[in-house]
Image (cartoon, rainbow, N blue to C red; front, side):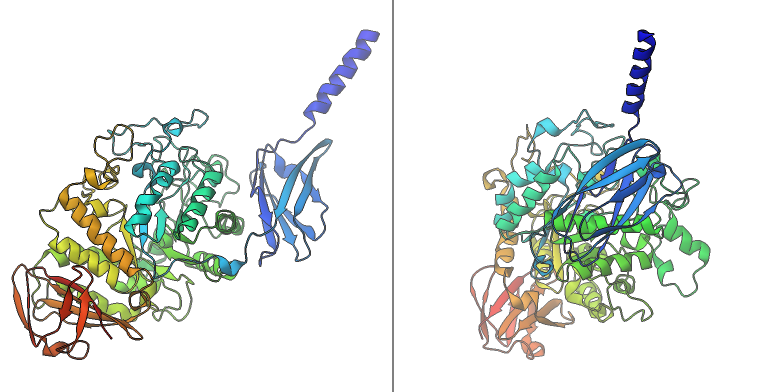
Length: 616
């Protein structure tokens, strides 16, 4: 009898131990008091958590609703965080029959006012870094055994992980700052626990976690703090269009409509004109909007309100948590227009001085300008996107600067592109660049001299807009993506254990590399706090004689830029430029440091370049 009683008690205890609810994650893990949007979504994930009832008691916080979707393993809680809520820890109770569990959720105090989150603008120069390819500061994190796909490092394979990390970037902040950089844009740093390693970062598997091969959330936050202490900003790369196929959303789909084309892979057309094509078919519009970028990156359906709420909250969480100064949104037009517009609006509402740049990859100014907020090209809707990327200009810069300038070609192609700036709501908020991680390098091969290279760099750093330079440009890194994208994402020499050359130091660079580095550094340091460049208006002259001349002016501050777009000397009658430059006017050429005097006739050597700081 005693054995029977003991057995019954034992079984009862075991049943009691099993009568708990398994919760694997809650996103976000914490939030803040005092946000403008009072509604907070918490995604709860766990075995059959959707069958549980949630409750909480906390002053100023109410549970408005609990949403259950197709998968029983998700529960979406919607809380109202009133202005009366104070920082502290609340307990959220979960009940399912006799099963019980609870989780602590913390409300934090905001560290600074929303207006103190300052975005990037035309006074900045963005330095684009692919973390896996820049520097390996901690080889111990190259392989994380606890990850599902701990891809090994193989630097001989351009498409494998190479081991770069956040610590490597931090170790070279002196180099970056010394170059004259004011803002760093990092390609995605979030977890990409994917087969093959997904070194580039564009197949997110956890939106709230830095990839452990790069570092930790705290390390990322600390890196941003160190950048801020040096006067440098940080831009975070985000992706709303798709996630990685190993994300829990794809492995266990919250609802049937969480992804576009949920029955299987349908590739996008990669054609973005359906957004504004007046004759567009529904078929073409859907394929563009809803098609998948690649099979390993399933396309998210942002018209699902719970998904879009999650993504919007996630971007706000990273701004508030880490203090980033901007977001670069990948594949911006591949997402539904209305969803992205609402997201931009929400971020602007929370952080009025923040900035977002969208990757709007068009070959025409009309396509790019269509996406800038308050566009003159579509009065029926607003994207609320402050900054777009100038792919139309990027697409022609190499040929324009390398070829000879006649009445139509060479630098006239630059002139003609800028003449279309009337389409942009704000040309000064356009991101300009010669290349990036998705394009061929500006230099396809090692140059023999820097004539056209210097002109292109000078134009990038003195014309309208927000300039961006791709890591390694300053040391003449070159290549094309014909055989592999990895060939335009090569390792920075000296950033990795065993490198025989360290191009982070001048002693290891070639004379031509040092000439390029010094040239870019000189302009960048001069460019800082120069309102003629960051705020000034622009007047340019058509290069009918092979010479491209333009003025940037703000108040009494005037800059004159002159380029000879030919490999031959040009003798020029300067009278045509008299509205901005008269004979006898003087200045200092910031490149050579020599005085500049305008005379009625002037000779310009082959590929001559002047950036003249005019004397008032």
